[in-house]
Length: 426
Ligand code: ZN
Image (cartoon, rainbow, N blue to C red; front, side, top):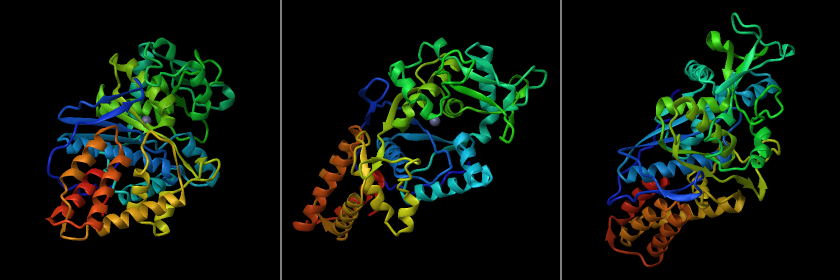
């Protein structure tokens, strides 16, 4: 697939700082030690609804991470998937009486507009499930062959089509208990896993599974569902959700890439399962060196969710005329590991900050930029402390507005730094 266009990233004088971030799998802050090219995988959207503030916060967080790496002299190979076929998309399309492909196309286009407006750097490889089915099916067949995966018969009442030469239709599941790395990404207890599994796409009640937590790798086609040819071993069907990220990450980045990112709701089962399935395929570990997760974003103190209908949509704010840079600043005012709530006051404060920065940057001369540049770099490299970076810029802006300053070109340097490091165009 083709991603949205990249924003221009200006260069900034001086040197970047090596990034350390919080790794979910070890529960520690650790320095990322990418090679010349840093490798990043961020789980993409299932395009059945518009981008809400939780998504926006996630993509802005990993945008910051990329900017810190780039400033540190690394090239970045960034991969993002698009779950352009899965149950939620098909269910929404059926509910709304639209073709699932049309729904996906429309929501992907809206997502691109939102990301472009928020100045988020696009992935280098932007990969849909539909265009990856053949490769995913090959991996599922490999897992069946090595005994890591197994078939579960589909009840005849489901009306699934059997594979050629096969007695009946089968779904395929990954055997988590056969994998000694299972649980290593989340570090969760079995009780914690069981608590969220069903709500996050799992099917604990499916009869015939070896373990209730085993994830679906391949779903044999049911009447009225789209399907692809999985070859003689799988028959017609479509991949499970985690299998897509396993295959796309391995084919595009290989094992042991630097960072996998997403919202905290992806820690389990999605990131856990993607990683163990990759382990089953390659025998290598880790899948990602560091797992970074964005905390959930609520609305006025409540959990934001589709079922509650209280989603704050980036596209709706844009349609109301809100400056996308104010939206970005409202997000950056919160540390990515702290849960927070979107509020009207938060947006007002962000707009006021943006206005102050714009006024401070309007002159030719200003306070020296050296200290603010150092502070912004240092704060971002310390577990992406965006609020700390914003506070440093505030200090410089306050000095510019109250005391003035006569360093020729300083506002230009600060403006370029805000653009390059924070993605804020002032
Ligand atoms: Zn994923």
